[in-house]
Image (cartoon, rainbow, N blue to C red; front, side):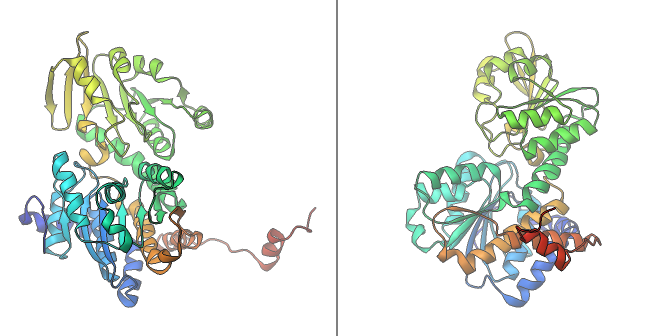
Amino acid sequence: MDYHIKDIALAEKGRLRIEWANHSMPVLNLIKEKFEKEKPLKGMKLSACLHVTTETASLMNTLKAGGADIVLCASNPLSTQDDVAASLVKDYEISVFSIKGEDTDTYYKHIKSALDHKPILTMDDGADLVSTIHSERTELISDLIGGTEETTTGIIRLKSMAEEGVLKFPIVAVNDAETKHLFDNRYGTGQSTIDGIIRATNRLIAGSVFVVCGYGWCGRGVAMRANGEGANVVITEVDPLRALEAVMDGYRVMPIEEAAKIGDFFVTLTGDISVLRREHFAMMKDGAIIANSGHFNVEIDIEELEALSNGSKRKIREYVDEYSLANGKRVYLLGEGRLINLAAAEGHPSSVMDMSFANQALSAEYMMKKGRELENKVYNVPEDIDKNIARMKLRSLGIKIDTLTDKQQKYLSSWDMGT
């Protein structure tokens, strides 16, 4: 089995951590039991580009139980947990190409290694597999049934491709499932981002001015958790509806130009480029801390920060780079501008990834059955899959809910039963 990881000797530690995470993933475990019996993915060669974490390991094991032949690579150079990669190779015999801290060349070399598997299904977190196939590995397209996509940034890229008519195979937008973005993006990103910032800095959140750039589901989650820590939360937005919602949720809303002058912490979660840039860095307080929790490290313009500091940079803590600006102020960049929740912490809690990866597993099954019938578009996760995952999650929590009576169902489906 071919692989490229940091150290196979880390496998024992990784195996125990995977076991620990798996305890909090009851929905995925139920799907794994079903997959072991039915083998719905038998014959599926699958290339996955995901954050290599304990939760991802549980997903890989579920897919393998269903009969899939898998190769896994990382979707971010800093998100790999090396012990997990080692365990997947040694204990579960899954081919992994992933090393925490790998440089850009190695990152793309690993993506190409995953594609050498000649998959019939891709599983992306950021659409790097799909974009590489379309730009460099077009010979793979004819055999591909389709793919799945995990995150907002990837969906934006893929929908753009579909609108321009260049997408060559169908994609299921796992990110847009209700049981994904309402929980993973909000509660998972909210908790893990704050966790990453605290682990990296050991600074007190309470009493600080905490600027959240972007009020999508991820931004909502971070704002909620920062507020819970006692921060004075400020939101910056370009969308008037989201900005209005932030106001109604009790936060201050202002342009970045104003927020830059007062913020102690800044977190970007927009999916766009150059959200924090030269003019903002120049306005910041001495000691301002900036971090990114969007998928790619483009939301903070690091090149402009480097230029402003004129090479005056030092690593003051493991995940903290200090930039001394010409005006005498210092700005601290966390995790090289990459996903701070995975660069400095462990990513989302396994209980919330349980639903996200249940969507991935069942969407893979769906694509195996229906993919050849679909057009080259981005599709939502089928509603019955989404609701079934919610039901399984509720059952795992010991929670029961009501069902509609026949009379209620008739009323909701009729047009002639008014007041």
